Image (cartoon, rainbow, N blue to C red):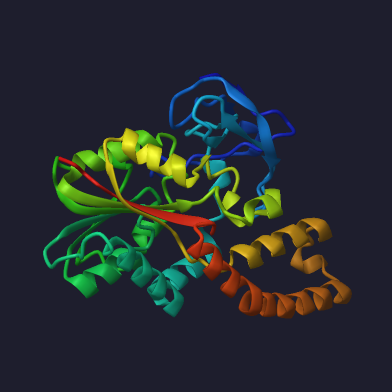
Amino acid sequence: MNATLAPADQAAPADTTSGEPSTSLRYDQVVFEEAPCPLCGATEPGEPILVGKDMVWRKEGQFPLVHCGQCGLVYQSPRPTPQTMRYYYEDCYSGQAQEDMRRFQLESGLSRLMSLYRMATVEKVRKFSPGDRVLDVGASYGGFIDYVRKERQIKAHAIDLDPGSIEKFVNKEDIDVICGDLLEVGYPDDHFDVVTIFETLEHVYEPVQTLEEIRRILKPGGLVSIEVPSWDSLLRPFFGRAWLPLLLPTHLQHFSRKHLAQCATKAGLEVAHHQAMFYPMELTVSLWMALAQLLGHVEDEDKGIGRKLLEMVLGILFIVVFVLVDVPLLFVLRLFGRSGHQTLVARNPG
């Protein structure tokens, strides 16, 4: 791969893949590399189909998405190197943002409903049983794995790269928690009954290798549940660069249903169940990001009375849009397999 310093007009991502504390990076220190296709390994991508920005944290840069000329997967190239990607994670999942996220995952009723929904999706293939050894990869603060532990009396394990999440993990007494990289930890062969990896595979640099490692540590017949954004979303073409699940540059690849299934199969797994997920907010937040881009960002201390009044009125309108449009529309899109998220449950054939 060809690594180059990010040009002045491109944003340079930063690395969160080591799980170790490191000094902060500056934008001009980020390094970009030409990436092969993460699915088939082809080294000649097509022309960019979209050039986007970091529309959530508003960090510098423009990030091209390309179609693989061989398998058709959409992925980012050039992309930040693993060693410098942390620039795009720094100050995003720390401080007040970190505390708000932790409170949502561990204390909100909505988060518990999400955990129930995810658990029920796995159990369309096989129910969790007391004593099952279950690993949650990319566990964050542990809301999901602790929920399943309480509901199904499993033996709970968790791993995440972020030291801040592990430091404030929900329950270190009843859950075996590791801060590190799944590809480096070295869990034993045939060790887990179920592995879950939610909203994580799109972030990793080696998605096929990651699923191969999961297959290695799964018992024969064991299950992995993979949840990622879906490139097949009917809303994606409408919102373009403002589509919420795009999340450039930290989302390195963008799986259609076909490509997620191919990724699992290439890793030696057998697809047992595959469905679109009902996650409201895709429309509302995408619309908000599109409007914010149109209006331009203004820091809180610089907002006049007119801007504050406009944002208050828009906030009320967006609540109405969420209730009357977003929720029913996403329910229908989920039924037709065209919502912005998907879950694939696969089996280790042994």
